[in-house]
Image (cartoon, rainbow, N blue to C red; front, side, top):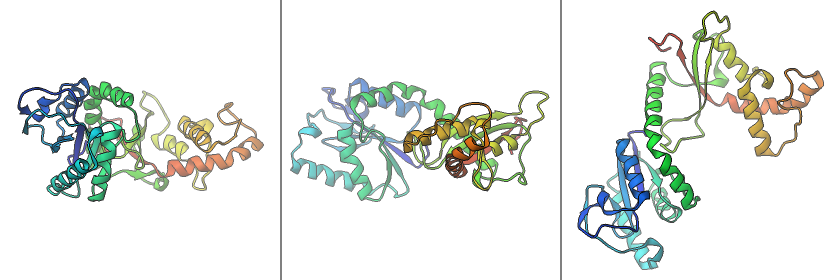
Length: 295
């Protein structure tokens, strides 16, 4: 997660009976999972409470019995006012990430938007089971964080992400290496500060290989006029399959056979151009096979 992100988790119904730090007040397995997720990954985080609004994890609080779902409109109004007052101490450049059930997400998200903050609320329209499943997997998120931090360093060292549409063979490309393709329109649950990796590929890394990494990327990209060959690129094949499903298209020949007739290729042409349009807007960053240097 980017340094400019702040994680908000919801409190829990099961509480300690003693005065203690907010992070130790809630005993549910869900809250403990979120707490571990935040602490293991060294995240800036806070707890949203139906009584106290946004709590610092180290803040000392008394036990209480307030349920957001049972609050009156007057209580909700006071809670909104308190939360908005608390938000005034945060810079507008901060991104908030809400990991909470739908009830809390629906309460918090509009207030953050109203006050001009960007946010990610992945469980806004999800059920409790989906939240629980994410928390179970959260212990692995530190590996994802490490990967994106390394990738961010690579991007900085290579002068930024290149848009595939703008890439040409005249640019410098390593002959062999690893490429990462990123989508600015997608983000991980870790935030919007960095585009999501949608494909990782290696090319010509084996001894004696004569092909080049640029030729592989060119096959994914297609020609400048939008034409392409999904039979030569598994990435184009998968993108096309997704577009067929999303747009309810009917192209029975897509993905069948290693070769195709001229008539078949012509019938697939509109979809190939759609694939090229999508891939053209993606970004790419490349790591040379010589691991001692990045390009």
